Length: 439
Image (cartoon, rainbow, N blue to C red; front, top):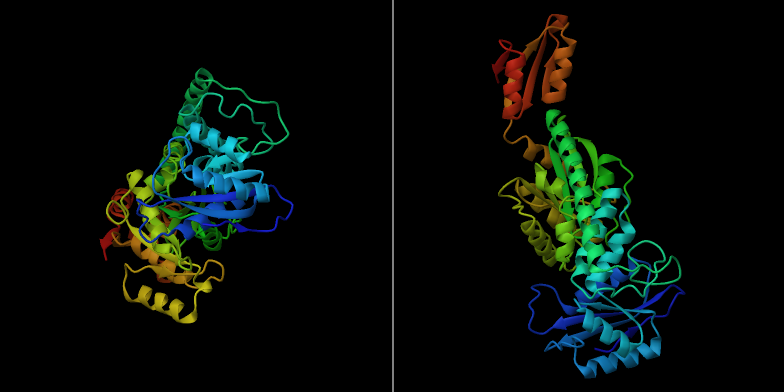
């Protein structure tokens, strides 16, 4: 397929090539959609895409991945537009990468290196940086030693892009192995800290709602809209890498913790799935998983399949081992008829997807009610009578239960109707023996 050329804006330039194996089945995905995603990934690290190309691959060539004719054809296109970097949306072996760089006279990055570069730039916390470095080193260890040592580091990421800056970094297998061991030990400490935090939350206890979804589905925008937080929310792939958690009060008074997580993507490198397991522990521990989908995206169904696949790799089975709510976001970008159809279907069934716009706020009240309905489905309803002087007991009740009704009985007593999980009902019975009645 002939390249589509774009005028450069002065930024570092890139030529994006998507390799489409003829034998591979992508379900609802097609080559153009995958090329568009690769272009989005490239733009996410500030590169100016000046040419695009799709290569149908009938047979893998060990030396260059694609046939010599295509290599020469792309080389001619590259010579015409002179990109600084060529992105190949496929996994290249070190030998294939080196040979293509020699043929095309340009730096070449494959899909894994591109995603690692994005993650390296975007990680903000110490934990995030450690996990990205672990993913990078695990990936690098499987490749040729010193395959990147001729590069210089310029800014974030891992220096795949090169450029003037710091002194050249040389690593060998022994040093990589030692660094991996150190990082894993540090991450074990992070995991212990997270465990303590989770146990502290369970003592409160607030259920955790984890937002998951394909990258750029609008999770962070929805997170901000629901919690009034100020999390980075941009129309770029992988805008969020580090987990963020905020308290959330639901319409009936139930309190929960909402967690924003890293976006998923098709063919996520296995090194990243493993390295980010600690980051995704909030998903593993969540009481409810909320899957945010981009309803306006042409590949929405295929993206859903990709997210469910990653969750399966993490050992999570939404809807089976825990409650699951599907959210169709960005309905403000749909035609009125399509938007109304999604909204009506969501109102008909308790398990239907909820149609929302995180940007305009449309549908958010319905979503919050669904969250509360799901989280309190197994709750027990009780009546509790307290003395007006028992302020400490009243505060305890408000921390541990959802107060449905309150009647102060003209100051003589406080009658409460409560909804709370079975384990909290047992605690309530222990603390207020003789004062509880079934609703």
